[in-house]
Image (cartoon, rainbow, N blue to C red; front, side):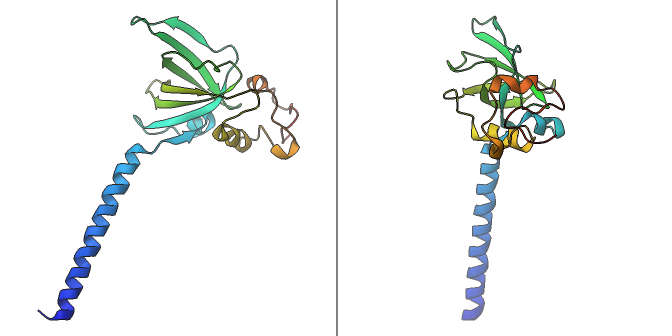
Amino acid sequence: MTKKRRRLWVLLLCGLGLGSATALTLTAFQDNLVFFRSPSDIAREAPPPGRAFRLGGLVEAGSVTKQMGTDGKPDVRFKVTDGPSAVTVAYVGVLPDLFREGQGVVTLGKLGPDGIFRASEVLARHDETYMPPEVADALKKTGHWNPQAGAAPPAATWNTLEPGKAPAGRSGS
């Protein structure tokens, strides 16, 4: 075997090893990636069953129901909306202190075959003016808020929007 051929084999083996390592790393990361989706995204295209993702939007006014589970833990159901669509969320556990109807929320969990999002974690806004970046992006994308037209309307009004009526800060017709 010539020196040139041996060098070629070494380079091919190194390339094969590097490619295999890259493929294994990307496969491992794919299982751990958590994507953000809004209720409108889910209505358009449901994620694969068993896939964890973050669901964000506003807690729909009047949708929160609380009861005590058989295991003694609080069992909470509420709807997360981005205006045009809403998704029912089931969560077992204590909600954050800042959790309120009409406020921004981001939940982590999986969508069940029955269409109910089973959250393992619920994150609420920081203060009256805070809105999670993902929620703000989803509201802009659905046309419910145009930042150039002013601040977002109060969160409590998002699920009460009437078709054809645009609140202050909303673009569109």
